[in-house]
Amino acid sequence: MSSSPLPATLLPDTAVLTENDTLVGGVSLRDIAAQFGTPAFVYDEATLRDRLTQAAATFDDGVAFASKSFLCGAMARLVHEAGMCIDVATGGEFDIVVRAGVPANRIIMHGNNKSHEELQRAVSLGVHRLIVDNFNEIERLRSIVSPRQPLDVLVRVTPGVEAHTHEFIMTGHEDTKFGLSVATGDARRAIDLLSAIPGISVKGVHAHIGSQILDFEGFRQELDVLVNFTKDDNFEELCVGGGLGVAYVEGEEAPSISEWGSALRAAALDVGMNPATKITAEPGRAIVAQAGLTLYTVGAVKPVTQRTYVAVDGGMSDNPRPVLYGSGYEAFDVTRPLEPRPQSVRIVGKHCETGDILVDEAFLPAETGVGSIIATPVTGAYGYSMASNYNRVPRPPVIFVKDGVAREVLRRETFDDLARLEM
Ligand SMILES: *Cc1c(COP(=O)(O)O)cnc(C)c1O
Image 1 (cartoon, protein in one colour):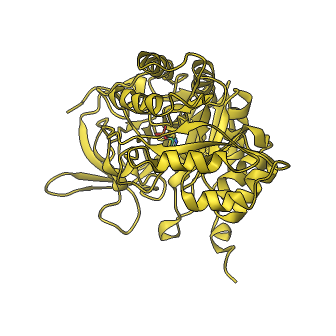
Image 2 (cartoon, rainbow, N blue to C red):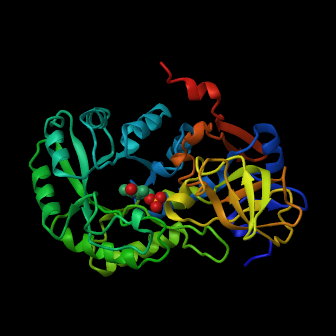
């Protein structure tokens, strides 16, 4: 398809392309590869900050970054400094955020199977909101919450909306493990039960219809359901969840966070929402995806009858999305970012699986081969956070770049790290 150079719109905001290098945050990607080795995740702090402040400015207070898309202490602190809350879905995510120094009253606790311990910790530290998912959780909360240890909640509802996205990341329809159905009356019963528990205050409802959504129709339908469902409740907040998509490959276009926010508010007012009601959201991907990229070194090039395989030093352990969802990515040679890309290849990893594909059909410059440093852009979301040690491959480091300085915020795992659980 494409033999033109990689469109710069897929790179972090500060990217500068030269004849023989690519700079991000004022730092040479060639130098990062030399200093920290490959594979490595590189994040542009300026892009992260821009998306975070955009979200904080667009939505009402309580808008949260969905930490499952990418989390480490440095990221949690950036989110907090930019004025956003942080959403966590497990005790582990909660712990990383608390250790990073984020106050509990800026944390939102999610999860469809929160343990007694997870609930206990969230309530005793005093989270901003807890999102209630099911009736068993309500019974657990009954034994933990009291007027001396109160809790503000949103009730997660399934609005019955089908977003246009991959089936595995579609969550707003009825046949799902998440939330309580508006249609069957479960959501209403949950609100009534919760309202009767001393110490619990129901602040509103929450829904999340899916991920990587590029058009607003599903969100409009979601708001229609949420606004109508709560029109007599006088709740202070409606949370529409996350899901705003990003452009991954040439030719794709995605709305900005501000455009998304304005469209949501307009849609809510259109269907009669009280203008005093707060609209909040929980973007993950739209904050971190474009800020990040992954550097690899090419180790083997193998022409077969049908195509050429280019094998790199990472793979499905640092980016499982192509395997899980069939997601498409682009690739480029960081030392030749302005050159045309006439070589059509399949980029694969080093794992023992035929399906270990990073880019099914990638385009690379003619000279790119063994030893070249290549990168896949737009890997900031659900790459590191879904990374595994499959085949006992150590996880790559995470490098933040800003104003000409590269800062390692998570170091590369070592073989000692891999052995540390052995008894
Ligand atoms: C995954 C998730 C998000 C974030 O989704 P993105 O598509 O990354 O924006 C937000 N809220 C909930 C409840 C989620 O499960």
